Length: 322
Image 1 (tube, rainbow, N blue to C red):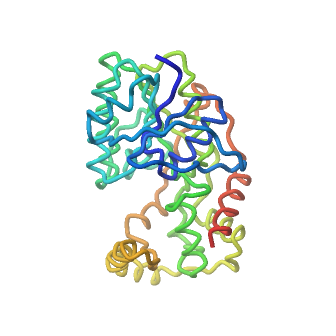
Image 2 (image 1 turned 120 degrees about the horizontal axis):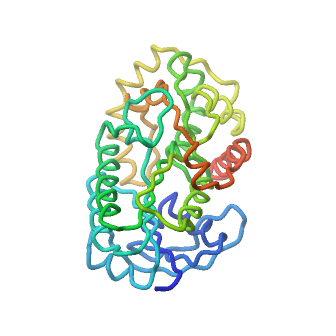
């Protein structure tokens, strides 16, 4: 088996950064997507070389063919929750002795509060978190049967191309619908720079053994959400920052469902609709949870991007994208 690394879900935000970053780190990367993929995202301007293989992660035969000749798999599949769990089930069945680096999420901790390490119980809330937790259970069973597995639990992954934690907050800040939320934004903002997630993945691929390891990947010194909104607003020119009253956020809760319907319809028509701020997201802004980063420091030892540099790169992309 040669030294190639298959990246499943290589066409998504994180997958494209994996292609570029792991290639720069010296890995021979293979892009696994359903359709041919153009050059991946790169913050350096360089276009890394990569092989493309057609793969449907939900089809065991297609996945088996894509795995031929690779020594490891980075699972970045991001789709509907049930499909994510199904893809992980097939991957565990087909991987054999290949190492799996699986991108999970802090969503597996659900509504937990305080300092949370990797041994905390998985108490997910909602379909996304439940799918991530189910995927972890499948891979834990695979590791117990002798498989090589590393599971990474990032926080809110931001950076160039991040729709959820860069673009959407940026648009809402410019529209005056986000700002200083007062007590509604006092929760801990566990950001993960996308370049840090790539660096952690590279370190996971280089570990001498991976008998079902789990690592939180997050900023070691997170602030609150109000601080993040202020920093992002300053970086994208969305100042002065508005103070958002609780009454306005109540209105946002009521408007979230119809705005989501409009968002889905607009996506089909290729039109940008106003972003919803669902109650689940508002709960995130208030959650007092801090990911414990110490196991990743000891076990992976990757170099993190300075937070100011990560924010500047994200803001530059957002400003350029308009």
